[in-house]
Image (cartoon, rainbow, N blue to C red):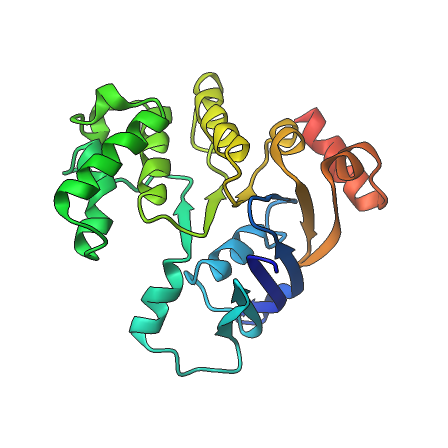
Length: 250
């Protein structure tokens, strides 16, 4: 059984159709990379999966249970909160709380939601900061951390809620090239540990190395999907070949 199944997701903003019927599945421990041109729909798809936007049509299931149905407009706030807990999201811009230390940023959500005792949550947060290589930065505030360190704190924060699926929205796009590698190394480590992940990325080499499956979204539809070697080594469509060529020239 797939851990995540998305069927016929459609989303429009006004008269602009951004998603035109997207279907995909994700198995437990699998890494899915979503690639495509700007404006193609990849971030909107991720936001719909995470309930930051609501798809106009379609369904989504986690572990065989439907958690979103576009035909059902009666989802309560509590249902929405519970459904979001299936996902951990790491944003482009880190979105850490500046008034809290790295450790406090990681413990905040578990403490607010009563996921464990404060002592248990602190112990887990310390372990997660160690996992992303930041044990020595637990007491530092975001302003005292580099962009790469802040993004690694954001990864630890997302993991603190033990989500079924960890999602990344272009996690290195706000980073200088010289510190991009430290974040990508953490994500690769998570992949090696069989963490189920969806990664929207413009890092083609990284997607080829880490992903089990790649989706190419263009003009609101999945134009091509397959294993990394198929997508990057033997693209079937001219549109995908053009896109990959443009990324290599960039």
